[in-house]
Length: 199
Figure 1 (tube, rainbow, N blue to C red):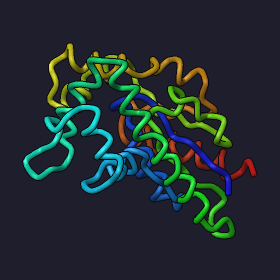
Figure 2: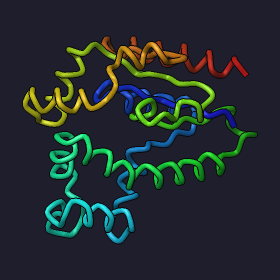
Figure 3: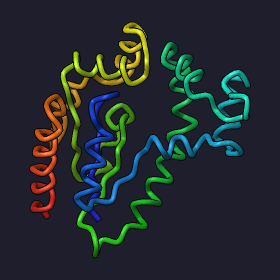
């Protein structure tokens, strides 16, 4: 089973690209979903987060308040590293288990959506890397609209990741998401064909 990583920056269109690959029959997994499961109520991950950041990061039901925690970790690089040290090992374990459970006789490759692929140095774990990219202006506008953030906070979250131009430079394939959905879909099909025909 060939392993493909999908990455990009916050609000550069990764979720859309991943969903379209699923429509094309590619098994996919979202590391953000795994990260949420790693700190679900009752998990050792959530206990570790509370131990480090206090009970103020929980909501009224005892679940993690992701907005509160985001406000802390995006303002403090050391806090973000601490959170990543709690969450990333569990995400990686769950992802390895998922890839191992795929049937290579049915699928030539499977895809993992990993926003921080380059930041955590995992690109070497994959046979190819796709970057979903858009202009910095489009990215900023999308973050502000999607998350309801003022511009300074949106810029802070974007700055917590590698610049998208750097990710594009290191990618095996780039899918631009600046244009229409039809244009993006066309680029997705082109990359899909290249991947399917390369093995």
